[in-house]
Image 1 (cartoon, rainbow, N blue to C red):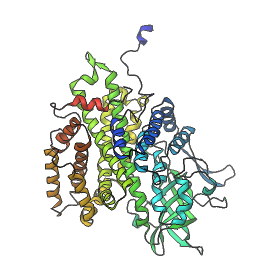
Image 2 (cartoon, rainbow, N blue to C red):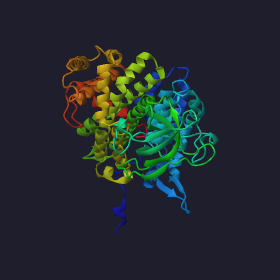
Image 3 (cartoon, helix red, strand yellow):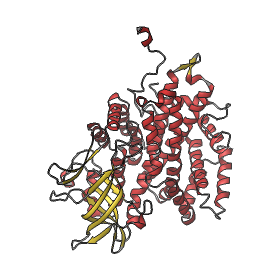
Image 4 (tube, one colour):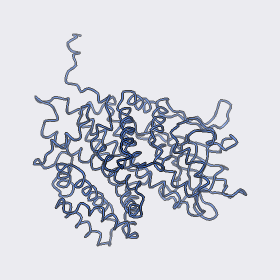
Length: 545
């Protein structure tokens, strides 16, 4: 075969060796906006270091290898003893260790902790999304544990540690620990009040033995788990350690690992409890109320994780279009492709700005911000996670056939994209949660309207959309059947308000025209051609492109 047939031209160089944080103008602006000046230099420094690591060839290789070698369950040792251990590829441990050392489980006790962690989570997820599950669970467990100061005193320093130690040992003998969660059961799924796992009290204060199962147990290799079980006083929250203080294994039978569509590097399991020792967290009968703080935090991580997947997909699409020539010129300069890229960039920017605003509200932690989060988190979780799959799918198409090939990394992003819409409560669950806030918590509605109102007068399409939303909220008849429509409008007017205040005019104009003004088709790439689309695309371009 002639050597000339192997000459490679017009192929795109890999997007590697760049600072994922610094290359994201939207994210860097959000950090500068929400972090106090006295803390900002340190935050920017740590995020730049993490960004360079996330964009390195090494981290990209870790992500590819962790997905190519999924976790393996070992139920017994060679002698027939039950061990229930999950084996991960070394790349998984490197990813997780780097994340822990970067503070991605430490948000609750440092200045601007939630914003810094959210930005880091958004950056590092772009290297590999699967290991975000144990990071999220560990981070989110802190508010639940704080309902019991004695438990929090023991476990919180371990969960917020910057040291990752793999392997099962008594948690108190480790420099850092991970926590998972088990709520759903076979017969109930989202309906946790139908749980049948029983909790039998022991003579020791707060001690119980659990008997039952969990259909989905997140991160089953963790050092401990927050689970729901039915005690004599009703559904309650419990902490289940994998290894007891004397070094013996707590009965925790992992029956199998889930064979998932995506999220291949991460383990999700089915577990059985049979005389499993547990410690009550909070009060008997108030398990849902106790664990709801953990659920709210993990839902916010679903928003952040989806924003990360969108950002990585859009960065890849813009990078590809910058270097790929077609029909006599760079793909990025073709009007139709520019329209597609701009539309994708708008969705990505709106997701990032919203995610970081929610993280900032967690840092402020006033009554006003807590009320705002009560409505805004489920609305954002509903909308942003649903938009993720559409964005990633369209971004993949920008790469053409090359994007459909595993080596591009885009298929892995596409398989991951639907996950955050399903975990921690699917779309209907989030929509119903928003309805409950609208109907029962006037403070949440008022806080939301005050936030949206900060953009009043900046764009007539936003003002009209807010007016239409208020009209819709005034008609409560049949609202459950209209819940998705209502929640979509809640999320969009909130994103619109944030963008008119903080984004460049060309971005805010394009968003309001297309998402709020209705000047758009049913697919990406149907923005009004009169908009400044070139500036929108240039803003989304990663620096290395």
